[in-house]
Length: 176
Image (cartoon, rainbow, N blue to C red; front, side, top):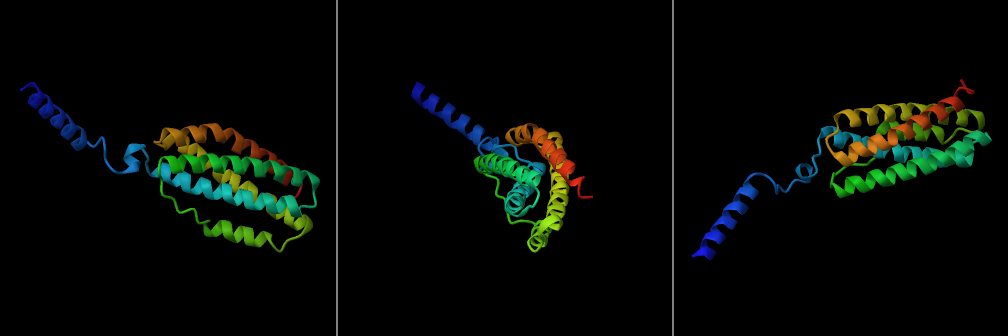
């Protein structure tokens, strides 16, 4: 008789567990993902990819040694930040359309035909704009994101994004 009672208790507990939502199929529920988390993940991944592409272009095209050096540092920063964020989004199973947004594609296309000082100035201007956007994005994620891993990523990377912005803006000041 004890085994029947134990079995009923286990079934009842299992039913309560499942009906309470603890095992919902949605990965968003399982990992506490809100709209801010989704927006942050999508836009930050796009910005890091754009940073990688533009920095690679600058590393090979710039006529200014300091910009080439900065572009190499930016490549490392964006590569690491993108890999970390991509790992987090894969782990928490956020489905993101990482197709680069139209403005980013247009800005990159506008860099392609430029040479020399015109390229350097346009590259730095574009990077300052995107890094400012990233600072705002990371700040909002820290304040409003729900997922702990994504908030921690924002907390960890925001100082580096601000540093990249400061360095890029300092270089750009010579071209204004």
